[in-house]
Amino acid sequence: MKPIETERLLLRPWRLEDAADMYAYAKNPNVGPNAGWKPHESVEESKAILESWIHSDEEEDIWAIVPKETGRACGSIGLHQDGRRPGVPNCRELGYVLGQEQWGKGYMTEAAKAVLRYGFAELGLGLIAVRHHLHNQRSRRVIEKCGFHYEGTMRQYSRRYDGTLLDGCFYSMTAQEFQALQAAWKKG
Image (cartoon, rainbow, N blue to C red; front, side, top):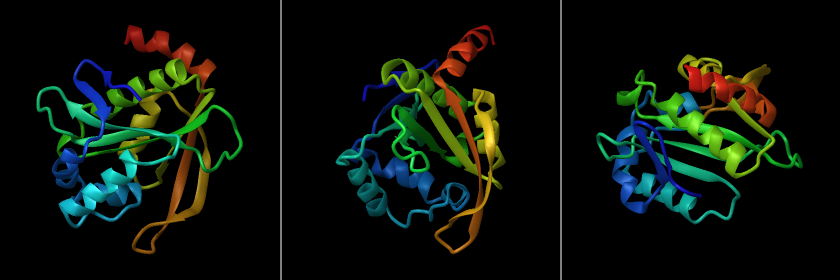
C-alpha cells in the first residue's frame, strides 16, 4: 500500500503513534455509531485497533486521512474484503470514517475518489462496493458524489454494538463505470 496525495489530503498508512489522533475522533458519540461501532473508550483501545490493522494478514488497504494543513489523522479510509461477494475476484468494499470536526469540508469525497483511482488503476479491481446505514445521510451523499450505483436496501442487515438492528443501503461501481466517471471528475 502506498501513500496517496490529493490537493488537500495525504492518505498514508496508519502508525501506532497515530493512536491519540484516532482516539480524538473515535471517542465522539456522533462518529462511530454512524458506522455501527461503539465510541472508543481510551487511547489504548484506539492503539489496539491500529495494531490489528498494521499487523493484519487480511488483503486490505487502510489509510489515515491527514489534512495537509494540520498534519494530524482525522479519519480513515480503506479497501476491505467484500463479505457479501465471497469468491468474486478483484472486488473490494470501500469503508470510511471521518472526525466530526471535518464534516462538511469535502474531505471524504476527495479521499474516496483518490482511493477509487488507486483501487481500479493500481490494484486492477473490477468492482468496488460501498454501503451505509440508512440513517447516515452524510455517507450517502459521499457515495452519490462519487457516482456509485444504488443496488438496494437490506432491512435489518446488521446489529450495532448496542443491539439496534440497522438497515443498510448498498452500492457498487465497476471499472468500466469508473473510467466513464473520471472524465466528468476532471471537468468538475
